[in-house]
Image (cartoon, rainbow, N blue to C red; front, side, top):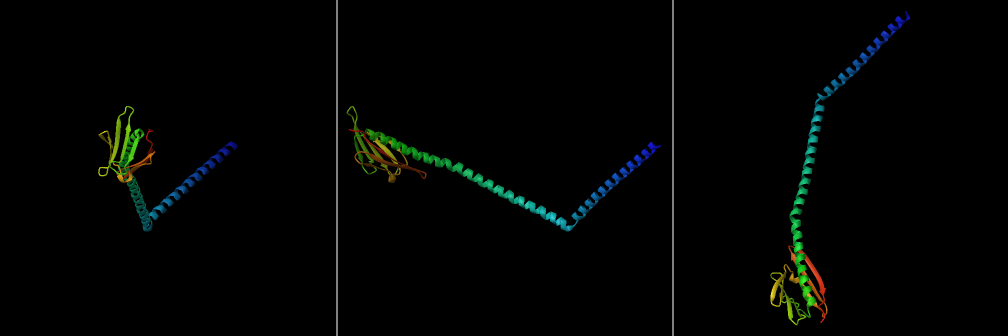
Length: 207
């Protein structure tokens, strides 16, 4: 008898629990439907639609401005890179050419002065410098350097044989001075606006 009553109570309790659960789901579903209806009603309002449309238009304009700015930055960077690619090699070549011309002049003048027993720094362009010496076998030699103002060339005449030593020489900025013991020479070469100048001192061999 007692067991039957307990079963009846358990069944009643379970039934009420199912009813409460069903009621809870119903309430939640009703609220969701109500929220959805409210959202739909708000969206149907003209003011809400206008705000959405204006917001979308604003985002599109901002994106367009950003895209234009990025494109401009990339274009400027590409232009600068192209300019460097086209101009830097030319500048480097001109500078290297000027340096090589000065090096050639320094090499030949220094070589002859170290052999020379007589030095004549004329102070003019042609001849620019006259060097003379007698070798160990008694042969007399003469090396004459000439600067040509028109062609901007430095030439060397050694015992009647002439050769080109350097080009692009700036005759207004090139000179030599002899103080009786040391020869001071300044050679300047200019190529495409790039200038290289070198001043050096050389002592002739002792008698």
